[in-house]
Length: 130
Image 1 (cartoon, helix red, strand yellow):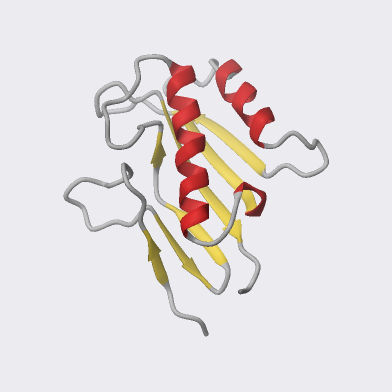
Image 2 (cartoon, helix red, strand yellow):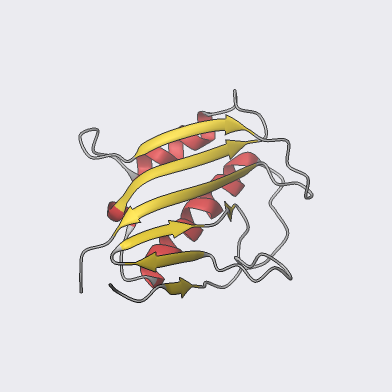
């Protein structure tokens, strides 16, 4: 069995908690919460900016693990307002334009307890063996 490896990227820490951005083992990558924060800055006020930053952070995690957005098989997303999916869908279609090759997705509501966060995601990816 392969070694488990933590994946870290700048701007995606879990504060004082000892939690990596993601973990990979035997080609399977699971992330922790991925927020729409850019480079450790405070959250943009608008949902569109947070969604864009969230997708950039997803890509950065996968790149650090040796993969890409193409390796994602499932994304769970929490929105502060689950009815507000226009920005999410716009960025989703940009990231996954091929209707025959999109990851599964689940969206749910989340009353965020930390500041101005409006969206968060967790992903599961399967990376090709090196």
